[in-house]
Length: 522
Image (tube, rainbow, N blue to C red):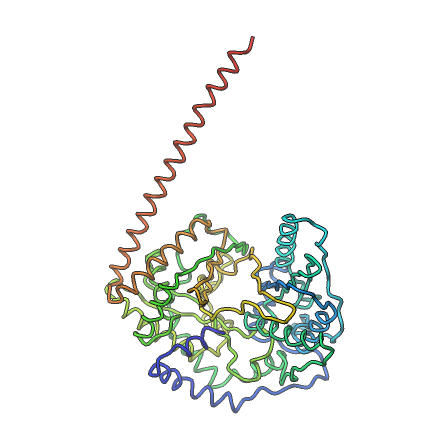
């Protein structure tokens, strides 16, 4: 579920009323502007604004895998391969965007919808490899496939590979390109796969209703709808809100920023305890804000401490599926919002939280303007070294589906390791029954894993402080972070000294052995 839907669910009645009032006019216009289904006489359609940006980036760096979206299902039990192939073929048939390629025709970028046809599912049989070698090989294959670039001019944006571990154990690996998908879309794919597989395994036809529109219809509609007063109002908001914003966030890095982004990345996991997660939820309810707003306020305070900047800009995602026609559609709908907050040391955390709340609600009310248009109207100085407008993103979602049961087949959703990073730091979090979990997807050109680990510990320390002292001044909370930083430095120096003494002791032993050997020589 998107950050926006999660946020609305957590709002107090008073806060929800404020947001409802701000969105009222937009909902009314949306009802009047139902997305129509266009003629299929031709197979070429314009790109959505989001697609246009990714197609530009793809042509700029055709070998990049920065926008691959990998996911995998671990399947235990007897697998009906024919039903699985039928299910994937039907999903491609239902969702035109999954059989679409991209081209430039007479200077115009277009998406070309291909025919629906049955495809044989690639199968890699690893059942003859003994454990634990099998696990190593499977992990390597998953990593290679997840990071293999797409050629969007000749290849559709969905690849599926089946790894056979044994007769009753498989891994189904999906790799999608962001130009045709987002995290919501992956949820749609998994749900439809479960429904179709069950039906086809029982010899029944697809029970899924026909989709009212396709993604290409949305792309055409978006360009026609977002104009006139609607476009002007939202453009004016973002121009006012982001005027004079800093070009980048100056995080302390382990290495100088390279002249051009490489998008090399890694992941560092983080988990907040159930107790701390519960206290954060309680604080949010007391303050009349969402859990996302509370975490965002603390995160911005941490960035303020690390950078010594007062103007803090963080990005987030919204699903951008406010119309019923798009709810069950695979495609690139997610939009990015720019959340800017001024922070000063004389604020209490409650006051900072109020600022973050207001900024977030206003951004939600103006979420329809695509991020690509926001960049276009602001026209910031372009740089090959970092992303425009923001370089750090925070996302809070409900827990992803752990798996789905299709007796006798049991499926579990896996998360393949990412070797890429679209931004300096992307920080997705989600709520689980055991607390708040997530990871920091970071740019390895800039940061070491140890740095991300320290950042995670500082963030947890700050969250613990704000739930205990929500009336504390920003300056007091920064002092807590400074003390924690000093403590970690002392501990690090102590460990370094111990390691150095150990190396010195080992080095001193070597000459003794050498001299004994030398003494034995004639």
